[in-house]
Length: 133
Image (cartoon, rainbow, N blue to C red; front, side, top):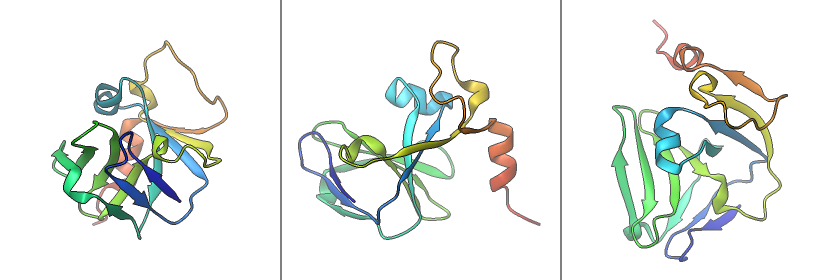
């Protein structure tokens, strides 16, 4: 997949992914005024124009990236796993399918997207990704 920000200063290449997930957490909604339309890419993300990326550490485990010229939201980066969750809007020609939604317990009532997608609460997400002892 190939995508770019609004102004074209940052381009991204990644292996094709056909699924998109939504994150309804309060932080994602504050960042974009809606859920993050997330494309999970485990490895092989290549950014061109990296000098135009501003990174904001939004938690102890993640940072968010955006184009410093046009403000386009580029990614959510899970630091410990070095995993990128890319904004689906970077790839307007991809045929994504909405398959899952997380932090549904924080989703406001004024929108509903895919009633048949797999849904998890914030607690369920944290339990799934908690370190195994």
